[in-house]
Length: 240
Length: 209
Image (cartoon, rainbow over all chains, first blue to last red; front, side, top):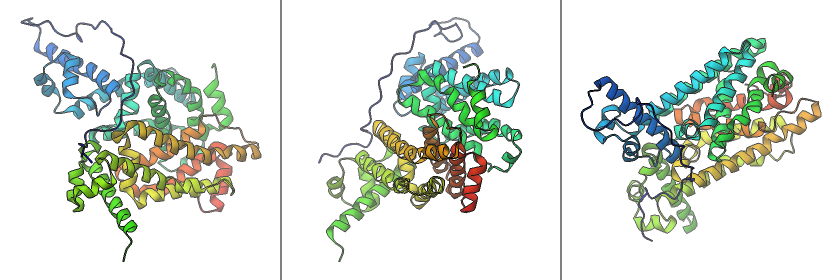
């Protein structure tokens, strides 16, 4: 038997469609070569943003394991030196991209929450917003739901914090039902784990663009324990 | 004197344990056949008698682990009362993780990095097995006249079971699993039977979180 290198893995990536080409604003575009008298702060911000934009595409399409610094700088149109100015390694770049993705998701969820006046409606709005954003960009969905579990310990730690943030928002539902105060602290984390698993499953099955379809059922499942099955169904499907 | 079959099984288990430990410390991409042999004090031809490569060794370890972890779920054949049987099966699943966390981590955390397609198939099979058990809750709910939960309920709770296990393996908080097993069982029961009936049934059997 001929020994094979362990790095020659048997797994193959699912082919994914190429991302749509978009016109980038100047702040995100590759800068013209030569002297251009742009402020250093602008150049640095431009380079970092281009790297993060490229990272969303590379990590979200190839996955963390198959992405390389070479592919990241090629996609961003920057030099290797520029990459290492901002990030010590691939995991740090992934972490920065994930931080940015979480900012989008949290801002989107907060927008939904601000427009709802009761806690159950806030859960519904946040669920719809987050699933809508993920469905709108399958690369973002893969990065946040699947690749985050395959990256390194720093990313896991940040993922853990985001799970706890979502669990904290659900925990507010204990005020809806007095006996819910007695529930184990872990309760809401389990609900978030279930939701995360469903989303990851849909992404892996190539159904990221249909994630919004999950919103009514997922909302009902998240609310049932706090407001009962009938009311949870009514809230989840009102106006649907 | 041990039989040659026993020796081969022990040797195979030793290679897989070592590969799983390397995958935990270095990631699946860092597992090399030569290092497995060095750590087990074996010759490489002995390794290649059993496995095609280091990834093959990891793949066999992943298959073995899924098989072992899901045994308590498969054993719940639906002949007993649904909720207590489900609670026992889930407790058995989490106990199997605590009994051999290294192979559980290989199967539930690192398997995507070894062979993505195979990992997806294995997790799908786990979800199907868990969904079969959890789905018996529909008959119990219908019997009680409870509102039937939405169609994705079984998948949601199956992923909750696996996700909870994965999170604790990543964080190294296996001491929490027994309590969390009871909490997950309570949540599963409440989805079909409501919180009061679930608390009553699990409380009578000392299975309440």
